[in-house]
Every structure is written in structure tokens, then in C-alpha cells.
Image 1 (cartoon, rainbow, N blue to C red):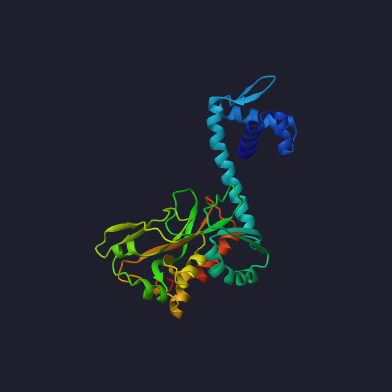
Image 2: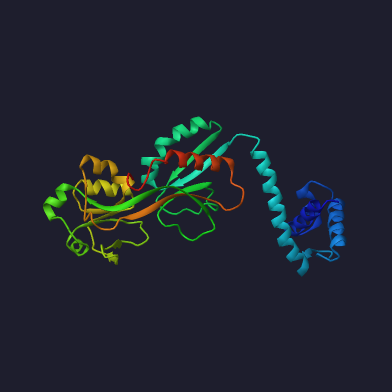
Length: 301
């Protein structure tokens, strides 16, 4: 008997809690499962299962072997899946989580090109301004901006952007133009309500000193585009990623505020579940985005 079959039979007995349910799960006879497990124990020279008339449970050695066996079986499954995937085109439903403003302004415009290149893939893009739990919530990947939280997820950088303070000329004409960080205490600041730091802005002074500004403003919202609209209408000063306000800046609808401050640079990442094997549909989409955003850099965005 081959080792993988023995491992699979043993692991299934542990998972199912008995030989009868393991046989049903594997689609073979109960006696065949028993032979696989007995052969494994004989080869290893150790008892892996405690057997009683009512239940089957792993011994201490069996439990340790079970953990290793699962890893081997998972690697074997990944190897089989890799070979299968390399013989066919990427296909299936691709479920993506992305922040609303980035999804609307930069992901949606290129999705049509991707779907033309990969007609066997369908995309479900969920716009949400929160960090979703990819695996438990059934997402294949997400697009995240800024410093990544510590996690087991894998990540690939797609592009970079900067974060700058901007305001409408009408606001600056009415309330004056701040020239240093302390001047912001006398101004109306527009806050992104879903930001991890709340209403605090983390800024860097020309000296390199790290500062936090917590001045209350008259408006906060959990959507970047709405925050930009508020700045354009003259409600106050906003602190936003440049990919969001680049067009408004080019048209003169907004201007930089305290432009000589050191510029914060943020990464734009594709994050996806861990594992040595990446689903073909995920790999295809990430490769596509890297190429699509290849000409986007912190200066432009």
C-alpha cells in the first residue's frame, strides 16, 4: 500500500471519529480503511489509534503524526491542483474587496479590459470601506492602501500613491492659507470617519518631527470621494491620497496646503490568502493589475 493512501485513511478516521464514517467519506469499504490504517501502524511500529467499541481516538503519537500527515496531504493536493491549473485557462468567479473610492475611480475602468482577456472569469467586486476577513467572508483577494496590518495574508504591491493636504481656492481665500502645522489648529479640517486613527492627522514637520493634529472639523464621512467633494465645495481642508484628487488638482478645483511638508507615500497592494499555490484566476488578475498600473507612481498619483 502506498504511503499517501495510508495517511489519507488515517487522517480521515481521525477527522470523522471512526472507520464507518471514514469509509463513507472516502468512498471505499470499511475493511479497506482498516487495512490502510493497520498497514501504516505496522510500517511505523507504533499504535496511532485507540479503538473501543464506542469510539476511535488518536493516541499521543497518533495526534502528532496526524498534524504532519495533514501537511503532507495538503501539499500533495496543492501539487495536483497546480498541474491541473497549468493545463487550463484561468476561470471561475473572482470575488474582490476594494475601498469604494479606489474601486470606482481606478479599478472599475480597467475591469472591462481584464474580462475581455479572460472571458472564462467572472468578477464580483464588493465596494466597502472596511478591512474584510478574506477567508471567513469568502473573498479571493482585496486591494488595500497604506501600511498593511500584520497577518498571514500574502501581498503584492501594485503601485504607490502619496497623501497630501488640499483645499479649494475659495476656502483659502476666506480663511487664509496655513504655512505651518500649528496653523491648522485655527482651520476647519475634514475627517475620514473610518480612519484607524480617528480624527487625528499624522504629519511630518520639515525637521522630520512626527506630529499629530486633532482639530475638530465640521464634517466627517466614511467615503473618500465625498470628502473630496466637501473640500472642493470649500468646507475645509482634507488630507487625502493623491490618486483621489489628481484630477481636481489639475483642474484648479483644489490646491496643495503647506506644500513644503515631507510627503507621505503609501503602497497600493493586492492581498490574498496564504499558501504556496495561488489560484490561477487570482494570479491572472494580479498580473493584469501590475501591468495596468505600471505607469502609475507616487508623483502622478
